[in-house]
Structures are given as C-alpha cells and as structure tokens.
Amino acid sequence: TVTVGQSSEAQRMPEEVSADAVMSEAGNLAQENFLSPTGKAPATSPKRPSSPQSVVKIQEPPEAATPFQRAPDATAPQAANGETEMPWLLRSAPADVGLDTRPLEELSQMLQKKVKAGTIPGALCCMVKDNRLVYMEACGYSHLERKLPISSDTIVRLYSNTKNVVAVALMCLIEDGLLSLDDTVAKYIPSFEQVNVIRAGRQAKRAVTIRDLACHTSGLGYGAFLDERASGATERRYQPLVQAVNQGEVKSLEVWCRELAKIPLRSEPGDRWEYGYSTDVLGRILEMVSGLSLDVLLKERVLGPLGMNNTSFAVPERDIHRLSALYVTRKTRGGVAVGNGKFRVLDDPYAPSGSCWTEGKREAILSAGGCIGSLHGGLVTTISDLLRFILMLQNGGELDGERILKKESVEAMTVNALPRATDGKCQWMHDKVPGVGWSLLNTSTVCEHTRLPQQYVVGEYGWGGAAGTHWAVLPKQGLVYACFVPMAMWNETHPVVQAVTKVLHRVLCLAPRVRGQAANRKRPLETMTSPSVSGDGAVTRPPAKATHSRFKQIDGVKYDRDILEQEL
Image: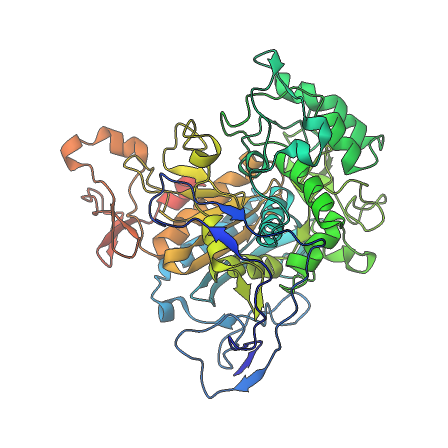
C-alpha cells in the first residue's frame, strides 16, 4: 500500500492571516458561529503554496485510514472505460467499518428496479465511511439513446451545488482578510446602495450585507429556469432579466448585478430566508475583491489544490462524450421527446447543436449560484471530484496534504447561520421543519430540536442541485455520501434522493423503520417514541412495537423492509 501526499506539520506552510472563529459553544445551536477577518488586508489575494509531497511505503493500512490509500486486496469497481473507479480511495466492505449491508442491498435493488421500469434514466450513488469507499452503485444510463452507462467518469451539471464551492472560496478570502461578512454589498456594487422592497413599497430599512448573500436573507428571489414558464409574481418580475441573459443582451456579471439591483427585494434584508440569486451577486463581489474572474478564482483556491480536474464551468470538446444528457419527464414543458416517451431531453451533448455546456458555447456570465438564464449555468463535475470536495470538508478543510480552509472555518460555516443573520427573527429554513437551518456553506444543516422530524440526523449538512445531484456529510458518524440522477426538476428526483438518504441512515442504525408519520399519528400517544442524543451526537430512537411480520429486528432496531418501495 502506498500513501501519497502526507506531509508533517513541520512541512506545512504557516497561514498568511488568521481568522477569528467564534466557536465558544460548538453544540449551542441557538448562537450562530461566524468569522470576522482581522489584520490589514493584503493588496492581492495570496495563493497558498502547495505542501511538499512524500511517498511512504507501509506494510498494511493503518487503523485510521486516509482517503488517499488503496487496499491491494480490495475489490475495485470498474468504470465504463475499463479503468478502476476512483483509485485514490481506499475500499472496505461495509461490515468492516461497522455498517449493516442489508439496507445497501435493498437500495441497489430499488435503484435497478426504477431504471428498469423507466422511472429514472440512471443513478449513481457512493458512500464513504471513515475515509473508505464502502458502497457504490451505478445503474442505468447517462445517455439513453446511445446506451452509455453512467459511471464515476460521467460528467454532470451541478447547478445549485455550485454555491457550495463558491462559499468555500468566500471563506478563503475572509481568512485572507480581504473582506468581512458584515461588509455591505454596496461597498463593492454601488447599485445596491438604494434598493426597494416590493412589499413595503419603499427603500429597504438597512443595507444588504455579504452575510445576507451567504445566508439567503437578502430579499432576493429566483426567476423561472429549466425552460419553464414564469409563474407567480416573483418569477414574472425577474423574467425580463432572464430573457436578456438568454438572448445575450447582458454581457457581463457586472451589468447583470446592476440590472438586478433595479428589481425590488421580496422582503427586508435580514427578515427571512428565501432561496434566490444571492450567491450570483456574491460571485461578482469575489471577482472584485480577488481581482480574478470567478472561474480562475475557483480553480486557484479550491478546484486546483483539491485535484478536481473534471470540474469547471464548461466541458472541453475532447470530453463532451462524458457529459450526461439532461432529462425531464414527458409531462414537463420543454425539451425533445426521446426513448420510450417517458422522458424529454433538455440538453444533449450528441444533438446537432451540441450541449450549451460545451467549451466555447457557454454564456459570457459565470453563474456562482447555478443558473441566471433559462437553462445553462454553474459548474459541471464528476462524482469523484465531488467526493474530494466533501471529504475535504469532512476532514476539517484539508485533503491530500492541501489545506483549503482552517478547521475552525469549516466548523463555523457548517452550523446554522440564520439566527445571527436575522437577529433571531428567523431560526429555520421552513417553519414546518423546526431544527433544519441554513449554513454559510450554502447547505441545510440539522440542529437538535424537540420537534425535529424523524428523517433528519443532528449534525448532518448537505445540499442538492436541480439536475439530480445531492451530497451530505454526517460528521459525527464519519460518513459522506453523494448521488446523481441525470434528471432536472427537484420534484422528479426528490423521491429517489429521499430514499437514498433514508436507507443510508438505516445503514448507520440511526432510526427505526416504521410506517411513517401518518402511522405515528394513528398510534396512541403513550406508544409514540421520541429521539434521544447519545454522547457522540448520534440520534437513537426506541424501536416501535412491531405488529406485522414484515418488521425484522437488526441490532436492536426494527426495520420495515417494504418501506423503501412505498416511498419510491
């Protein structure tokens, strides 16, 4: 076994500027943790030097494995091109790291069944426990008409998962002392000096800040995209700007931000959480502060050091055959009907016109949030690259000897940021889901709460994109996972993502399998169970009394082996 890229603390270069991470109580989720730069800002954004790499030969993998080792006797999945899938990851059987394999077998069967039934064109799911790849299922196709199998080599569109990469770049610049979360947006984009609020019919009470952009409490909303018609007052208000982008009338992010500032905010800054164009405005600020275009900044500070060589805003012509097609169901507007008629394709790399993600065809504006037009925007990546990104977060900001962020920065940007951003007016993303907040990483984050729904795990954070991408980290359990379904529209892919999430929670025995909330409501109050949190932060729930032979007990937890079928 060869360990590559491990450097001692003495070999690592000292940090340029320290960031004040307010982490007095990591477990106190009522108080938001944040970063505030100190010291005089350097004139230019310093580029961290690469740490020297060394190669050390050892006899066997150590107990605490790093993700850069390969077990010579492990069974390595094969990609469509015959090469080993993600050779940089150490493989282990799920049982070797204390996981139950039966839910994973059920998950594979369900995904294969859905592909065969034509519900989804394909699916790719990976799970890493303690820095070891313990599960990988690739079934179906990345391109239905050409029968191209989906694999870790497949390039997919990230859309909103682009926000996560941009959020890391933001924290890099904050660590460098180049900007503060409490800076006003108008400091960098003067057109945001006087913005109006549509509901109040007047100028906003306070200025929009970078913290508002990072937390989506700026009052900005979203227009229609994925070739959908504008519906509702909000989308219609943004529609002229969306069309201007589509037609090439807006030539730069600078012009786009100036036009966006003319559209009234949907709410007062800092009043409530609302998903919108905030990260796209943030992308422009990062360009101004760093003096680099967004694509260059991300490559120099995040993608390059992490070895994410397949992640960019466009796909080179030589790799366009690896880009998946983008499907929607036939009932969705737009696209061209394909295959068995169950799907329509929105973007096809093999179409005569090619994909709009092909290098040279991309829009002039780089979308930090994923999309500002009707279809194109955001980064593309592979599951291998995505795993490197989320493993960096799980490992405290470092991967393969390259430190991207301080550990304190990662901790600060993965807790609930809404109470701080809204002065306590807004605690959670949605009132109906208490305990699920929003982080500076641009992910949902799960906090301890007495009314937290059963399907959530305290400490978990992650997010998804509009083209069927989803990832999450369970830091206390040492687990990360990612899945791809090459379909657009969240309502189409959400059942699959939800099923994957629940099964992986079952693998860790984090929750019993019961009929669901509807069944719980029918049970007498004295028989209902409530969650408890163990010393290591894992959520446990007393097993419900089984009244049906379908329930099976595994390690003291009762599972319903049919529930996944019903959910899908």
